[in-house]
Image 1 (tube, rainbow, N blue to C red):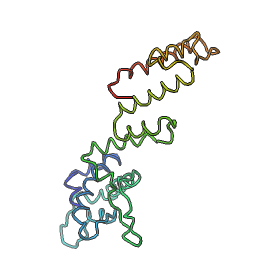
Image 2 (cartoon, helix red, strand yellow):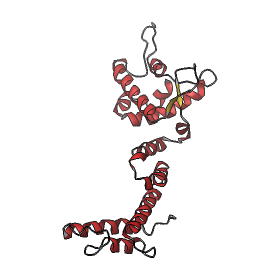
Image 3 (cartoon, helix red, strand yellow):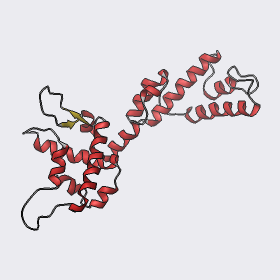
Image 4 (spheres, one colour):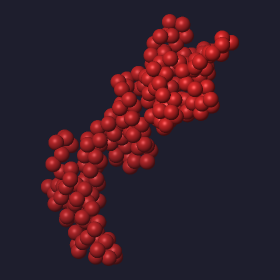
Length: 222
């Protein structure tokens, strides 16, 4: 796999990468390999990737791109990166009944332009849609997956604002900070827990006021 060696010529650098870091580099290497072999089979096999790094030859003084004494460590690192790509849905089966058991790059993987795109994708995957409140799941998760983090935060706080207004019964004319100050007023707020200590009530009011205040002047539409 000369493409990988060209991308990471130093074995110690390769071994120092985390699976997701190596996976990001391998993705573009695999893309080149897939494009090069598409006229024959197009599928990608981990066994082929590894065997290409360690050619078997009986020629004297045969050398490999990476030190052969590091073979087991390098093979493991590449296997971990391969597994990460598979777990993220970036390497998928071809979906052809009775066809090759190899993998191909997914449509998502094909859209990445550089390693930064892969890193952003990995971060976005940390937020699972099913852990979000139903009111947030669609708009917020979709924006987060597109790396539109400011839009996601704004949409989330708009949903909070609507929920606070509905729960408190306050009029639609109250928006943003005034709404939160009224609903969570430490002494008489509709959503204030009067059984809580004064400091706790004040802190909760400040939490909601501060959160919506930071995004109230957002340039994004509601």
